[in-house]
Amino acid sequence: MRLCKICAPIWKYDHHKAVFERNDDSASADLRRGEFKSPGFPRSYCDDLRCTYEIEPKLNSGVAINIDHFATEMLHDYVEVSQLVVVNGTRHAIRQEM
Image 1 (cartoon, rainbow, N blue to C red):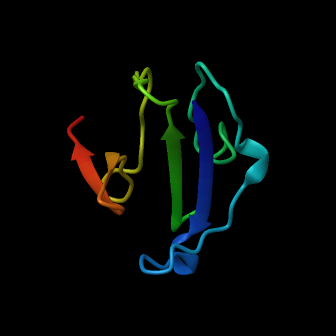
Image 2: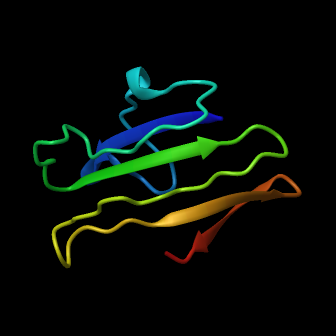
C-alpha cells in the first residue's frame, strides 16, 4: 500500500489544476499499517489548511480505516472519505459514509 500526504493552504488549492504543496517526506511505499495525524500534531494546525491523504492499495487489496480519536473545530473543519474509481480512463470519487 502506498500513502501520500498532501497539505496546502486553501488559497493555493485549485480544484481544476490540483495544485498542492507536497510533503514528500511523509510519503512512504509498502506500508501495511500506519496512522494519520494533523500537520504539526499535537500542536494546532493553521487556519485555511486543506490536507489530503491518498491511500493506494496493491492490486486486489483493500483498506480499512479505524478512527480512535477525532476532534475538529466545530462548523469549520471536517473529514471526508472517498473511494476513487477509474472507469474508461475517467476518475470518479465515490463519497463514503462515516
